[in-house]
Amino acid sequence: MGLFNFLKGKPKLPETGKQHLSPKPDAGLPESEIKVTPKTGETLATVILNGKTGQIVVPEGNTILNACLDQGIDAPFMCESGVCTTCRATLLQGKVEMMACYGLNDEEVKKGFILTCQSLPKSAEIVISFD
Ligand code: FES
Image 1: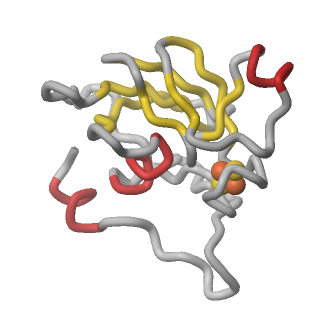
Image 2: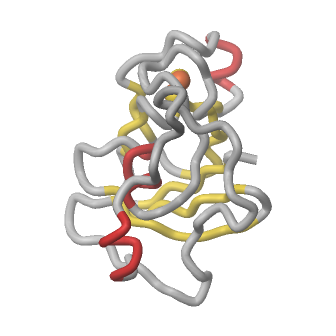
């Protein structure tokens, strides 16, 4: 995580409400040559968004969405409660546990869709795609 992203914090929310539906073209993903190293209990997450790939660390007990936003990734979200599916991504590698999953049916979950606002990583590495 770069110092700029650390100082920047979560992106500013639109004045119309707490939601974010249109990611920036660069997706806010860290440069691919920047390597991040997770500590014990953390998860290394490879994130694909808007055709770009970057890596972040998801601290233990954090949702994937919160880790993305905390580290400057412009991930889409709206309700943050597992209902709207705006934060939906595909889990390509690794394991996650969803605390709630109101917006996905069983078939979608079997296909690998996850709600990142409700997903806690349960493996040392995960790969997800918002695309
Ligand atoms: S932001 Fe609505 S389900 Fe995740």
